[in-house]
Every structure is written in structure tokens, then in C-alpha cells.
Image 1 (tube, helix red, strand yellow):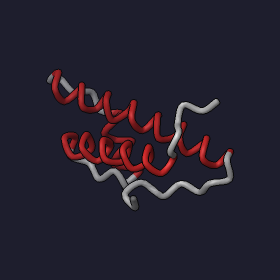
Image 2 (cartoon, rainbow, N blue to C red; image 1 turned 45 degrees about the vertical axis):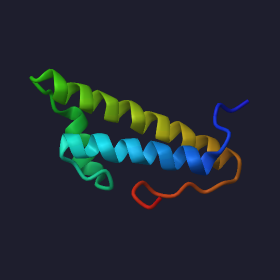
Image 3 (tube, rainbow, N blue to C red; image 1 turned 90 degrees about the vertical axis):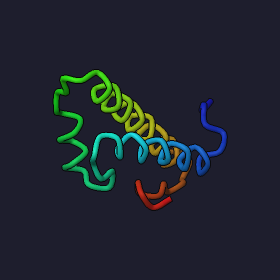
Image 4 (cartoon, rainbow, N blue to C red; image 1 turned 135 degrees about the vertical axis):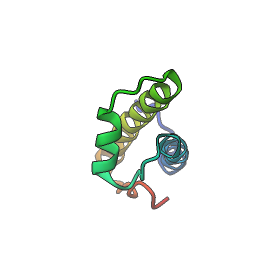
Length: 82
């Protein structure tokens, strides 16, 4: 059984957090190349690295949520559209 009860709400909440950490990292979350570059960069300061790692984890959660939605026949909105 899925850990997600309300897909649309979970998607909205994840996107909110993704946007927050993307802003800290200084990247546009709708630009895949910018996100990949951010996640690939090594940061020397702990705060920047923590934000980058949080962004990575949230993006992985969003991918899992999208997969579950598709398995249920639901079409997830694109990041930045919710």
C-alpha cells in the first residue's frame, strides 16, 4: 500500500519544499540542467551542502510520488505548475 494518501496534496507540499531549497541553492527548479548542475556541485560550506542534499532528497521523493501517481492512472503536474 502507498504511503501517499492524497497525491495532489503531497505533490503540492513537495513542490513547496523543492522550491524553498532550490531558492537557497540559487537554481530554477523547472530547469533540469540547472538542477543537475546544482546537485553535482561540491560546496565547501556546510549550509550550502545541506540545502543541496535536502533538494536531492526531495526530488527523489517527488520522482517516487510521480511513479505512484502514474501507476494509479493519474498524471502528475510538472514541477513549478502546482
